[in-house]
Amino acid sequence: MSSRRKFIRNATYMAGGGVLSSAINNKAFAYFKNRVAPSDQLNIVAIGINGQGWSNLLAAVKVPGVNIVGLCDVDKNVIDRRMGEFAKINIDSAKVKTYRDHKEVLDRKDVDAVIIGTPDHWHALQMINACEAGKDVFVEKPVGNSIGECRAMVKAQQRYNKVVQAGQWQRSQQHFKDAIDYVHSGKLGNIRTVKVWCYLDWKQPLEVKPDAPVPPGVDYARWLGPAPTRLFNPNRFHFTFRWFWDYAGGLMTDWGVHLLDYALIGMKVANPKSISTVGGKFAKPDSADETPDTLMAMYEFDNFNIIWDHAVGIGNGNYNRDHGIAFIGNNGTLVLNRGGWEVLEEKKNEHKVMVPFQKSIDNGLDKHWVNFVDVIRSRNMKDLHCPIQAGADIASFAQMGNIAYRTRQKLFWDAGKQQFTDDAINKKYLMKEYHNGYQLPKV
Image (tube, rainbow, N blue to C red):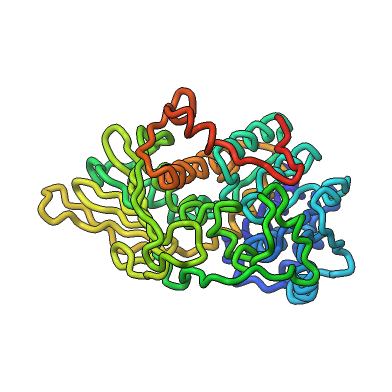
């Protein structure tokens, strides 16, 4: 490896958690950025910057050699606000161009990669467009808003051979890896059940609001994109779009893809035999939300079950944690969440195992971005922490639970055909219908 490559990798390692990024100030990052050779610079544009897209940008700029050269959003108010925040992170806003249409971004020959932080219903179309245009992609989770979209995204990555990282940054956190290594060690004994849960007391069911004029500066037709045309309603816009089926899938696809992902990794599985659910709008039946505020989904496998459990407006989750994954074995139970992991003893079993709480010590999002940039430079796709296939697998798994809820049926999955055994369900739910003249490209 050349000395220049060694420098870049060492600096990237420091930016992403070899030395905690919080301990390094902006001047230090600027120093490293200025020492990276022009041939190793990466120009990135962020598409969708109101929420997680902006968080991704803040992580990206810590990586040596990464330059933010553009912002794209349908809301001019968001663009103006973000442009005003660049001074805080030592970015010259004069060098950053702004866009309303992602296609204009993809036309730029000097852009190497894009961040897709738009609402879920835009992810598939924009990722495929970006791969077609020769860009590498960091796409937020859930990667697709339907099982069919997820499949198309995988095919696009394979056809165009671009680096596509799904934004499931927990896959880059060390304590998650350590916990799964323990699960795989066999010390827990036979694992019969994996419980996965998310209880959000900081989110309450939405109050019904009337339709309203489109806010000034918002290109609402472009925001809707392939979703059905509707009058503007503030509940369906920034952040809270998550609770409407047109655009997303509620907590199941918001937090579920993060947490259920580790249930699948821990048990080394992907395809359930059956999926069944119970739940509804129990917290406030007359809320504006379409997605359920209370839901339990059971995924059946040969020798164990995975159970998803979520509640909006309640914070007292299992094991006194508001979110987590519990691998319940004969010898003990491993409880894992973003804060850390531990093993709880099964007192009546002679094979006693117990591990005290192991606290998280790194920044998963920063390390996820280091990994993405490193693979862009190496082109070794096997090194990606969350390639598009992994993102598609877990997004599809979460969609199965939502489809079981919406149909109010116990569904059976055909692993060989990668579809449900009920053709009527496949026809209605495997692929989202596109509207307003938009079509998902055939790959």
